[in-house]
Length: 115
Image (tube, rainbow, N blue to C red):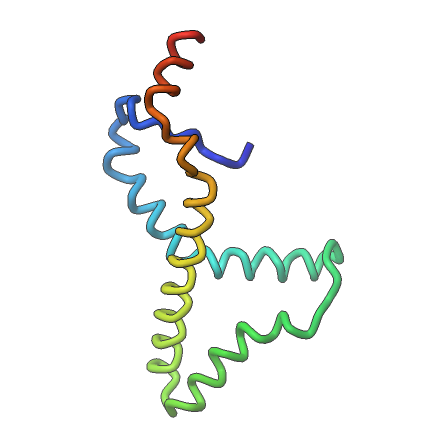
């Protein structure tokens, strides 16, 4: 199961209190890069079919550098745009996995007493 069970009633250890937010923030900010890398790896290993649109993501970086006329500024603007899109995308994904029935504390406590 790739999903972490989140229970706000369980006390957090030091790692989860101090370092988890850093890991979670980095994952959300750079998630699109991870997804892109995974897709490229799957295409290279022939587990996914090749499509020309796999080049759109790196071409956006190239075109932005050409438009602004500076490599550093172009890459920075694209990274900010990608991070913003990544935050939006993964926030929606987390909202879908954390629907209301998953956060019903009365039901959660009742279920915990049964087990």
